[in-house]
Length: 68
Image (cartoon, rainbow, N blue to C red; front, side, top):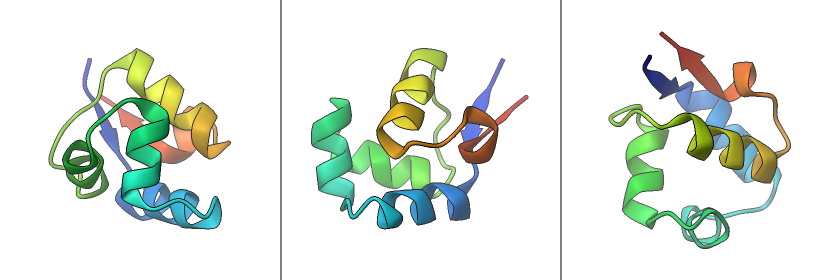
């Protein structure tokens, strides 16, 4: 199973919450560079990390991520 980010939806959700990449990184325990890679759909993400990001951004999984 591969979980990738829907780039536009992810960035929009982060901006709507008023978070910078650095803010989201701090809250999620991830690095700012990893958040940047996710926003560009360069890296995939694990289920637990995807769930945590959805909770932080108040969005359902299917809005922010594609599961292949």
